[in-house]
Image (cartoon, rainbow, N blue to C red; front, top):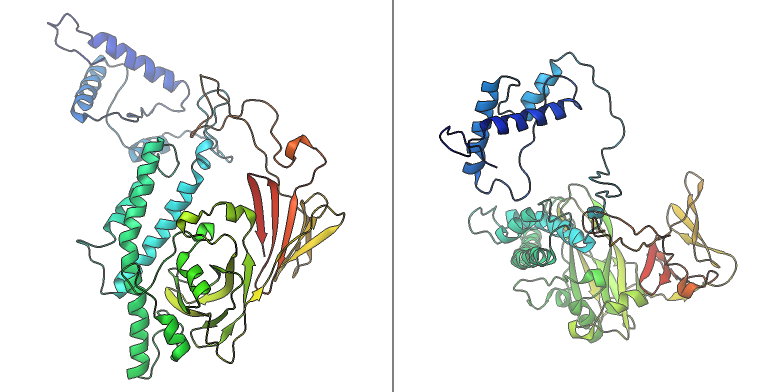
Length: 478
């Protein structure tokens, strides 16, 4: 209700509005130490007409001060804390967390930590991609603040930082629009990234040929190799307008360019870019036809150990033929890439005309091991994980260098959501319906039925695939 302070009006309400304000101030004061309190003004969808709101605030401040019971004024957090600091009051120390926040009984605001998990990942991925694109834009001649190909992606990433975007609490139509904006921005940025990678490698070749010197390791660690095998690998078709082709569906192990190259015997040049300021050692996974013979080389022509791993049933279920999947014989080629800080490393995947020093990728299989009594170990360089083959559960963790052994398990619990009208479970609030949690491990109500295990052992990595139910699986890789 607005303040009507013209005494000639029948609706004159200054006294009533002042009394309401003073009452609210005294109520807040009863739970606040000291004589200074802060009214926090505003809310979602408020102040869209700022003149109306501030006109009323100006009036209430003036009339409250004329009343004299309290002193009201516009302030800032800095002024408020300065007043508290100078009040000579001893305040308690809070050492526990402020979260989770709750605005009602059994209404904890913890749902948004996981709401729309794929959107959260997409936002994080595009933020990293934008950073890489900015760096490559610099190598192409410096940032272009007007009309840059990165403007749409920068705007989209910025919008995704809104508290109703990154949290996943927007309506579905709005979430769809966020994803669309990110995608459209990434398409523009992809063309720039492809040009940047091509320019980096072309510049490296020119320097090597004309000066006989290498570029700084912060730019390119290894020079592209010469020779017919490696030259053929570098001749990629410019499907996306640049020298390189990018694969946006690697999260479902799908890339038509690498799969068709392995099927048809076209050698590949692979550029691995690192936008961080420290060197990285990362596993690279490329979808291929698993029965093809192939070998991997670094930029100096040295063979790199690699393995070909069949896709899991769960990974295969995400693929459809209408987006180029070869479901019958699909696998992943995996190798370890060493990438310099803020630089690019070049690798070659050869499917024909193999050099004499080729080390062919090892084809491994996923071996079912569940249902028997005993244990099996998953081995990494420094870590060993032990699984119970009868129950399918992870049971122990071993840190090999320090000889540390810990009992360890991973469990998944599913709840039915509350549909209570006053406060249902949703994007903001995680609220189960109060019944016991559902156990996704026990399919068909059989409490003694273990879940499936598959073990993959290879020269590049080992992994355990646990299938808890048709809709829940976990892969642990060392």
